[in-house]
Image 1 (cartoon, rainbow, N blue to C red):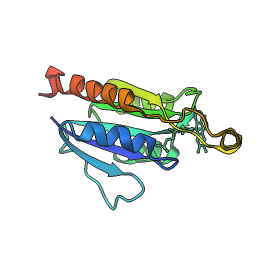
Image 2: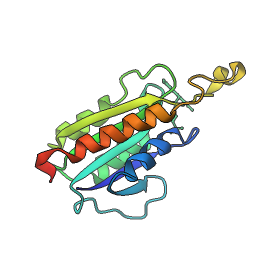
Image 3: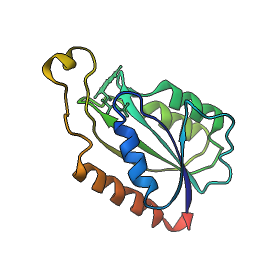
Image 4: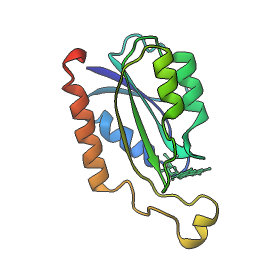
Length: 152
Ligand SMILES: Cc1cc2nc3c(=O)[nH]c(=O)nc-3n(C[C@H](O)[C@H](O)[C@H](O)COP(=O)(O)O)c2cc1C
């Protein structure tokens, strides 16, 4: 299975740790949505979309990226980290996937160190996350995608 994970991880690199762990498991290209030039996602068997949660949603740049570049009918999976309250998390991306006829293979999330606003004053929330257990679960999640027989 050849996958691209298109991500943005701008707070503490929490989400980047997850996608790098997944990438080490297989044939995965990591695409930072901030630094892309042009991108063609047709060649991949599935596409991951990943970011932290900022204001109860995944980052707008990942959402805009998906609107623009996610090919119709391409299977997707969603990955995010959150400081404490994930809110509706993936709602908009799921809507886009539905509009484009993209099957959502699964979703993985875990806590991520958060020093946004007042949380900085108390040393941050979810300190130490993602930790080794989170990363092991991310690995297991990615392996389960690879076992999806429709993608082989
Ligand atoms: C501007 C901003 C807004 C955030 N909003 C939320 C939120 O609504 N809910 C939540 O659980 N965490 C929130 N967080 C915490 C991040 O989701 C968390 O730290 C995440 O792991 C950051 O991922 P990153 O390091 O990959 O950017 C916010 C962080 C920032 C900087």
